[in-house]
Length: 104
Image (spheres, rainbow, N blue to C red):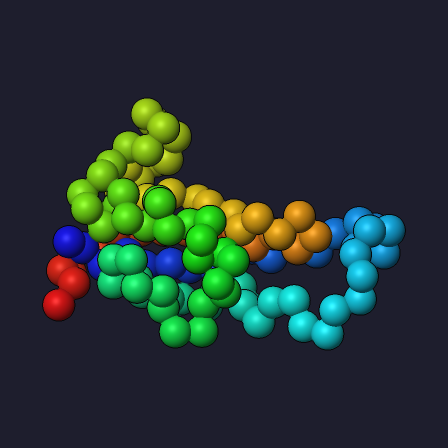
């Protein structure tokens, strides 16, 4: 099984939707653009958002087990995927890339 590099590529904040629909919360997301995590299979990287992990895990596992070309030609790099978390107020886009390194 291969390791999978997870890069935070973009964080979008929909202030209009937050103002209209969300109850105030103290801290919704600690991720920052450019931040990199490495997944060792199904094991969530330290410091990674629990909710985002649930969303991206099927894609991480597909890539870790040698899956390629998700959705038939969707990505230029067949060993990658661009997946967003399921937070409708502040979605985070992650680039997942299969690494050459195997999980220990």
